[in-house]
Image (tube, rainbow, N blue to C red; front, side, top):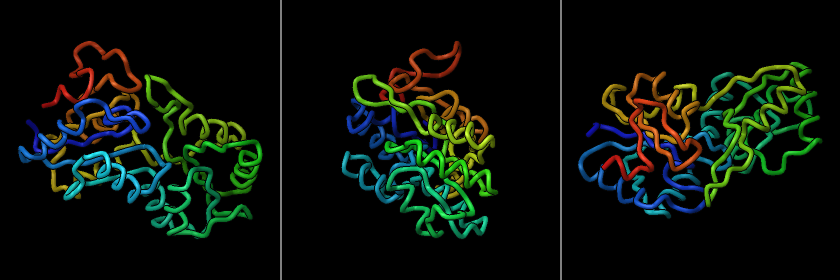
Length: 244
């Protein structure tokens, strides 16, 4: 058993609004045994407060746990860089998070922040492209090209939207979420954990697993989300039930 466990959300603990069987029981069992728990998601559609509410509503422990999302991560970056205005391509959680630290505008913004956006269209692409070509910073929450849903289905992820904006603007973004190790390191600091004693659990090799490895943590791949086959020799299970 590890001192701490950092869990991805979509595809690891749930798909859409459907729980992965045994996920709540496993996380609670680990916490009851003394492990410190963190949740780290590339999903920017909701604010940290909304994720805490969803986790609690589904039965996951949140008291004393760390919760990090790319919406809050992007807002922290905007604030740290002193960016005063931004054009946001994303859902309500990302809009609310950025609005808390900068003015939202489509008129000469200092930055363009792009995440998963279910209403993405040509007009949003055009505004984002023109702003970035005009000198605005280009910030992406993450580059996951797909997003796991119920029934084993996938839909386009934030990376698909980011790719369209990057192609039109002819500029690569600053990426906030996994595989960058930033949110993993923030969780370790908040929970008072060392990397080597903390297991990062996720369903994507190119984001969850890579971010954990880059942070210096042991990693565990579950096959309940995007990945269906584990690389030879990698610790894995069908779902989080294999952890406890």
